[in-house]
Image (cartoon, rainbow, N blue to C red; front, side, top):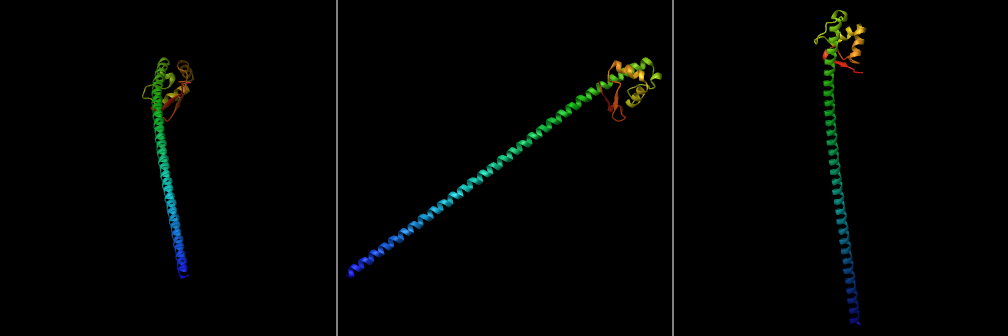
Length: 167
């Protein structure tokens, strides 16, 4: 009877140990799984951060490119404007020379006394304009020769800054 009891106890102990071991194993597995999950999450986060950084870099590059393009466009526009200004200046010089020649010819034809001004390249255009506006006949003659040249719009009093509108 004692032997039986002993055996029973032994069996019980064995079972208990087995259960304990099983539990331990289970816990270990659980811990392992948890660790694995944690690692996975960490990896995911890392990847996300990497992606975010990549996106940020891409955006920065895009912005830089856009800025470069804008700068280029601005430079081009400035160059175009400069070219246009140069062309305008050339045209103006040509127009002014033409106007002076025509006016000199006309004043020479009718005489400086009737016109009321002594024409020379050193005259300011304001004087010439005043004289022409006074002399209606001269104005008409000018308009017949070169249309629009009689209308001299002044930008300041200096002769170099006179603007002509060719109608």
